[in-house]
Length: 278
Length: 300
Image (cartoon, rainbow over the protein chains, first blue to last red):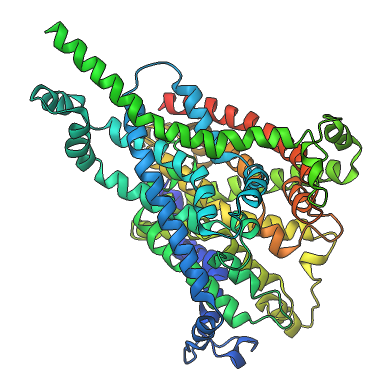
């Protein structure tokens, strides 16, 4: 809609041409505030008006390192990576099969998968909590990995389907004619073509598991506590350590920011569990 | 040839079965079985302090009968409805506005559009921490600025009148980018001829928007609304960190109430019944979303 009207608007209001970056800056201000705080020396954190230029310090990050944060960070990494790999190993063949499935019941299956993604986490948490208490899986990484599969496995199946749909069936048929088995065709012909899709799906799975707060809050205490829960725990003492909270928050969001920019094209279909093609 | 074709077909079927089976079994185990377990638990007076109570089916519908007379539950439905409506309406409006701004903005800002999605991809708990910083009077730059100007702002998250709005604002900030992303994608596929033709006929910007752009993006807006509606039922980290459901139960949505009943009061049976109600609502809206998004997809 950049018409004459817009142009005349810009002439009257010189700021209009800067509208996009200005709005963006205003919107990201809360986020930038947390980021700058994590690098601010403690005495300056409460200073107002805030200093824009200051000597950045890593004291809060060092403090985190000594406060047992690395263990939680490691727990987050392990549970996210393992649940992603497991979901990929189980989900990719299923997605391929579903993509080649001409039979009935696709809508039902699709709805089922969407529901698993959309169900309030507490619906899974109560049964899992009771089962884990019985099985001794509370506060273990294994327990978290299993429950992360409830959202990562459906995500893989649903995200990978369009990528397999795009692999022409004639390619497979030609290889079958040459006497290759289905498993060989799948591993050597289909998988390489879908590599980009697998990478994007893997990143989305990792992000979902990494971002989880609710499951980790309830199913872990100390041993398997993940980074998001650890950050919140810094708020439970007298005199909150805002520097550490900001540094912990920044560390938790760092991998997310990098990865989500890599998969920005697939964000929409990931968020809507494939019900909407982005 | 037909014999070989048949053997391919048999091979294909065997492969499909083999490829699907592990996933289906696993999903049944981690999603199907727990759902059944939840339904069963909701029929018991199960409490953590009383181990035998989880297998007590003497009065299976007791929990569901209690729901109707539980003022806190009924109240939480009202809070949930208000929170959902406020946040979804604001997000869709704001997200559409942002998308229109970026779409009609200058070419050189196009690459900035990726940065608009940052609030949405941040871990939800980090979003909650960010807003905790903003709403805590001791440290918030907003409160400090107000103090310098001689104005005393009320503590938003603990004030009966503002607590829900403090959640709404934070949630809108977090999720407006979702609508932004979807609407921007739709705007980029809007054929330029439509707009030009309308301009030639002398339509101004408002009429172009009302008669061409809005009908074009309407299905996308509907999908956004439904998906955000489903997600708003899950609202947790913001409420957990900012208000804890309070003051009183002003921000206690149903999901949060179910969490409290289960993991603070230890009443797992009753909490399961509340969760079943939430699940039913999710099923209904998801089914609608699925139907609608298929239609929206078919129209393209």
